[in-house]
Image (cartoon, rainbow, N blue to C red; front, top):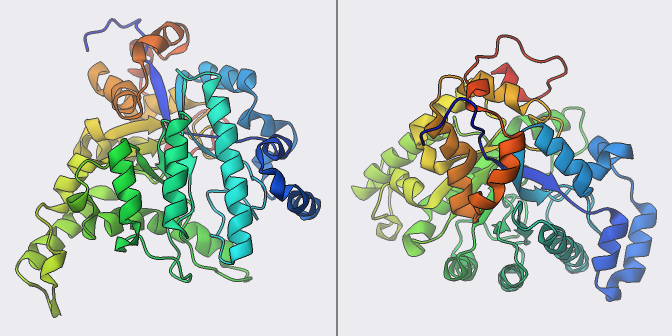
Length: 400
């Protein structure tokens, strides 16, 4: 990329969040659940500060949202969920999975209402939004059906799969139970996304429960990566595309080294005292599957994450703002970019801001360039190191 100092980057955020209001979801809900919905809504209390009052409209108000994003330098976004759909106890990303048949049926109805809303909302600005559909993993046939529906309705962001808590009867991600889902995603070229927030056990009602949730969130976010790699999913389905989002990337070099070491030991038949099943052997090292099958949406990266991005390969890396979350970089994304990337070349930044996400999620960069020419950060602007964090910045990237 040969550019002048005044040229502007086309910034695609690989991690943004949106959702409908409860009233909007009710319009998309299967009529068979209307009475159940009325009872649920009457008892529900919203626990999220960013989904209350005036700030909540950032989740669905396109004019407000575009104004915020463009002021911050972003022109397109991959959309993960945020608001609470019918029958969910809390936000979709952090809610424990449904366990009883009635709870599962109701929450599937709520989840599908969200997917329907999202498809329509993204269709209003298809060049600028790639929506990610959701599934539950309790019933793989139902998940496959929802994946097919999402493709038919233009949700080109792929499908979001949750991590599976150990204290449930749901099959773990390393189970062959999910092979029909992986096969369908490969056949239909559907991206599999995993976003941090799920997979936790029930911590109970203790003073330290919230601390335990926060401390262990990263580890539970990372688990699906090694569960899928080491169980041979990419061996059986070599064309799958798997994205890890909002869980950083600085943990990956050491994890890949560990997994490669285990792979080497397993290829010899043993790992210490463990005799390995020959069927567990993989034909490639885990780091090779990473380079072939895995991408990372690195949200609000600071200097430490930026260094790791280069180690892992920029064709695997995508930048994300996490709008509209409190920990996201908006409205100070340009400042955080300066803190993390001031010594990067324009070509390197074009890769992580634009090309990787555009190639993976199917954004037409030519259709974004006009708006980016007005609002995107300039090459010269991002080459100036940040000397002082902006007042009011809440993103962890500023404090690495």
